[in-house]
Image 1 (tube, rainbow, N blue to C red):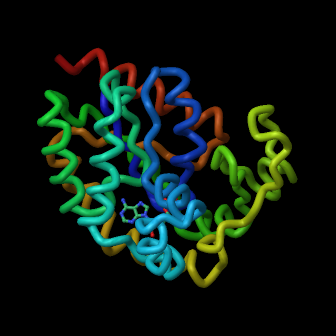
Image 2: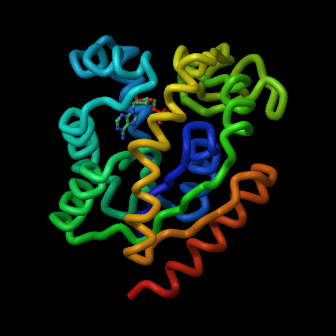
Image 3: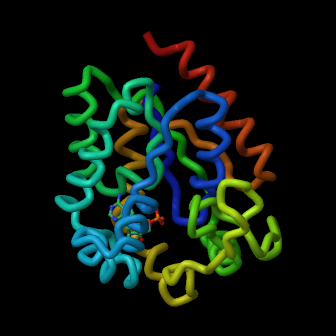
Length: 220
Ligand code: AMP
């Protein structure tokens, strides 16, 4: 199965991706993580993306598509991918379809995590991330100071620059303007599954997995 996680920043895509990939055996590919990895290593791509990321804007489609295309050529994608944060524009959605078609695959389901803007702002202003494994935590809802996973050796959690209030507002505007048209796009293709992102992490995760299992039974 190839699945897209669609939703505003802070809607829970990254948190749920961990659970879904473990449960369904999909490879998690998060475009934001790929950009942050490049930024951390000061690569040409990372430096190019930095200005856009700091302003809460989307990195141009050609750069983003080239980066994701490269990742999609790795062997672990063959068993199915869970895309998180990509596509974010109609042009990216069309590029993805072509990428998957070239591999003999297709988009099987699109999970749209619905969360109201005021809740997004509360979540992002308290979000903390592990620099090593990129797992998101929250100052109040999921409170850790250091990453609890052994593989990360007690790495201190940090607040992403783009989770500061001014940038959060810009990112939400970007979502409504450029990414929300994808909701209609995938709805018209009958691939969209709407899930409320407002329950507990476990409740939302279970609703996603149940709906993907049903979608998996329906697909040829
Ligand atoms: P995220 O971690 O998904 O919130 O992404 C962080 C930032 O990376 C975004 O605000 C964008 O600047 C950039 N980014 C991530 N994914 C994309 C994408 N699919 N298209 C363009 N920019 C992206």
